[in-house]
Image (tube, rainbow, N blue to C red; front, side, top):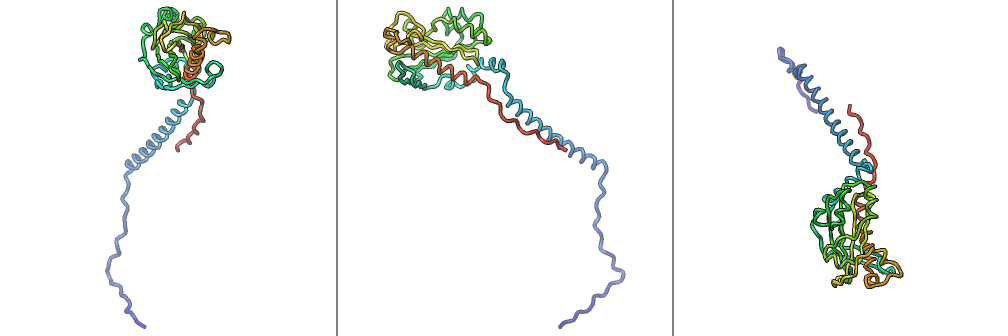
Length: 265
């Protein structure tokens, strides 16, 4: 067992100093409070702005606005989405034969006066013509050539519908007009565009005159162009390229709205 000597107090020893807090100036307190409120307002405002932009982007365009916007697809859409490098046509040939087409030529976008024949220019004078896109396809056997064209206009839907029934044989691209065998058109209801096709023999043979694809697709149709399926080629490519354009022109489906942000307190 050990013992210790009790500590004795030293008389006159001062108490240890107590910590003190600096007095906050009222002006500084007010400034800090205002900064905090301003920061909260900016964060809340940014959240509301982001939410509003999301809602605006998700909101589908009105039908007439979407239709007008589709008139600019010639410069807005990738070329491979307008003219796919390869197209397939299950049961698209004579007797339900399968078909495959490969793009072999692509023209730069062109003015209407340079790309269209005089009869097409005259017919489009009232509707207007913005730009023409063209490509050439061939079938798997490389025995046929098919021009595919898109004529973009600023016209409204009723004008385009009325125009479709009056269109003459389209011009060719990738072969001469004298080689044209069959032709077809497609006017999508979602876009102010005329899609046209015209088919020909790849060996340069010259039919008597270009005929509507439906004439050569009849069961009793005769002649080399009908038997070779050039009517089927023109019709199938017009439908497939036109359907692809319809998909590109269709307004996006509405998405679920983002939740409304809680108000910042």
